[in-house]
Length: 400
Image (tube, rainbow, N blue to C red):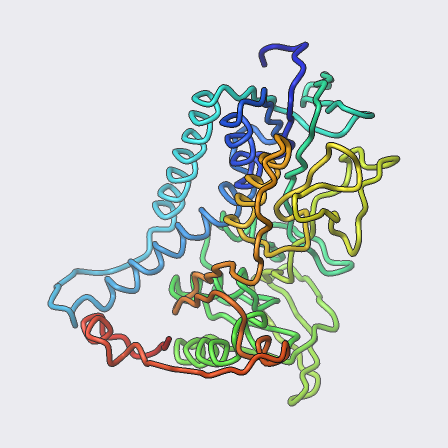
């Protein structure tokens, strides 16, 4: 840590895709900038236990699947098998190199990085607490909160890393579960279903709402549901979890479905993917005018909270929980600080992609939302399998 008595124009707490992009933009605009990160390496959840390692596993699963089916494309292979240790090594190498890249960008842009837990300390300052117990005060004219989110857990259920896991632990399992049950069929749930089904697990996907990927277009959800069933994934929608019993040899989950009534489902491992919560605890918000509603920080179109000179971005806000959204919010915050009056983000036009197998992508309003808002809607459809590229890849499903 350098420059211990520095006064900063802006201090950003959290170095995820929102925080580090906000820091870079602030530095580009001429602001003396500090970035505080509690973890040993920069990059936040997205880089270390989120987007990037998940996509690395997904790509390994895709390569495995393609290798198994290589013969139909004229490529002869020997025995095709999964080397899970090598998969994790590839994933870790990707994460490590990206973290080094962010570190380089901080140095290149003259951003001072502090390693420790950051929190607001009165008006115009951030306190950094390091792991060895030391505390340091960073006077700062502006503060950007970018502390992200963590997985939610069912009440009364604890993560043990072996039988009950969240996405964080699922990224580092040293074995492929014989049977895997996933609670939640949002983006996280369907991505891990895609990974472990191709790795060899018998996967059961349980969703309380009537369809998988509930925020996507209904036809897209139906197509993914059909594709999952074709791949042998047991999809249970409209199914509510009533109780979970953890034993030495596995997990028993009592569920209540709209169609089948009560049932006990068993699995070696239970992955809880029922959503994420914003990290607002121990941020020093007590006594400030920062408002929290339904677990999220409230901010205006320029990312300003109710506390003067305190901004919030990314998963702290009730906006789409996507890396590129957080990055753009970070840019808006930095430009707001220097008085540039940036254009508000149009959240109706955010690109969204779920990296399942098959993938699902969208932008703009769904058909249902457009109709609810009173728009006249025309729908055009075209199947992927009849496209030249689709035939080359032997695609059997999908549409635009």
